[in-house]
Amino acid sequence: MPFRTIPFSRGALINLSVFAFLMGLSLVIGLVVEPKWTVERTTLHVLTNDDGERYYMSRGKPVVIEPVAASESFLANADSSSLVGEIAETEAFVTEVDENGETHTYRLRAQKHWGFWSLLPALCAVLLCWITKEPISALLGGIVSGALILGQYDLTGAVLIPALGTTSVAGILVLYLWLLGGLLGIWSKSGAALAFAEWITRTVVRGPRTAKLVAWFLGIAFFQGGTVSTVLVGTTVRPIADKENISHEELAYIVDSTASPIASQLAFNAWPGYVQAFIFVSGVAFLATEADRIAFFFSSVPFCFYAIFAVLGTFLLSIEKPLFLGKKMKAAMERARETGKLDADEAAPLALPEMNESNVPVGYDASVLEFVLPLVLLITVAVGTFIAFGSPNVHWAFGSALLLTGAMALTKGMTLKELIEGFSTGVRGVVGGSIILLLAITIGGISQQTGGGTYLVEQLGSAIPWFLLPVLLQIMTMVIAFSTGTSWGTYAVAFPLAMPLAWAVANSQGIDHPWFFMTLCFAAVMDGSVYGDQCSPISDTTVLSSMCTGCDLMDHVKTQIPQATFAAVLAAIAWTVLAYLAG
Image (tube, rainbow, N blue to C red; front, side, top):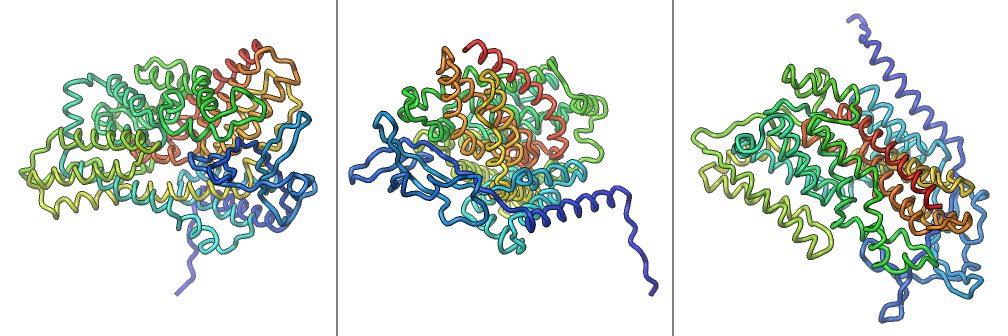
């Protein structure tokens, strides 16, 4: 049999060449570049329990510590510039006595990084996503790049299995693959989603504008933020938007750009309790207690300008009066209105086509209540568990909604076999999105291990003009969150540097209103992290926004970034002007 060459298109050869170059570069860096260490110093608000043990609060839970004198700690006395290779101690809790005789407690953590090359895994994933428009292979490329830098050549045993074989990942699979997928599938099988879309179209929607306003209003109403808001709004509004020829790029942007931004504005959720743990600064009276820090969080809300401009921008897009509109978004809107095509011709939506089709059993009469009651139950359980336990139990919420949906369908005459068919179709419909979500989480962990965020924080020195500090913190956190795909992870990295730095700058440069200046710096870190998370193709909320609205992942990213960047620039100008006035 004669040998035949396999034909490759020019584009495929370019993609393969770029992939090979990036992987080869990652391997060389892992073999040649010696990692450095940065010692992260976080001031702790330490309390004493009834047993005499010292502890601090982390994510709402007490962490008992046994601090030692700084003179006894290797990390406290080490010169970061000389720390290379492997070190014996990577975390320590130490106490120091200042010139006033007051004792302070610090947590010291040694963070490894490879300099600029620490950003390579995230850059690989983003670049490959951009040129291949295929997120699964791009994310795998970023994961392989990080593994090569870390010297973990057993990709399955040392990287994927440890990253994916965790309780949190199992929870994600149960939530988004079984509960969400099953719920969507049964709604499609029973015709409940279509019945709701037809009902709200008759009663509320009068065209694309009012349909988008429904999406915007629900994004505001579901202010818990993050994945809960994204999933609820996307799945609720999509059938309505599809009937009004609203492009999936438009809908994904509205869903994504109201989820996290509104959560920082209407912050009656888990955000204040989480963030306050990172902003304690020794000697700062208005950050002394947990209650003080939560009050400081809420006082910053009016100055979270990116969140304000982002939510306002989605509203103006909804009424089709945007202050700024990117070319790709404008083209998507014109395509959908004029041709009825909700996606671009080359798009690969993160949902199967059959999820949009109704396959209602013969003789089954769909009811709006089959959609509304499970949705109300879902929200009630999520809010109720938040009030009771401090954070919403989304598994209980989606699980109860799924059970109620199934029970109502069976009661109305659907057979068990038909119900399971709907459930299975729904699960199949979100498999692709769930895989991308898991890979995005994995590469986020890889990026943290290679120290991309640590390196960026290290580059921010204290010798900077005071009125530029908020915008520099914004840019730094934008890059960190975009590279890691997480806003909350960025808070943990950035706030321990940003708040002490802001206080030191305020005092050393004689700023007249230090509280106000620190508020601006706090808001810049909050909003920079939200922007980076929202625009990153490796962010869970970005993936979920695409999946729940049926949008191509990279089409969503490319059409969202121009509007988000416009809001970020406006916010940067506002922070700089107010910071200058604060001095």
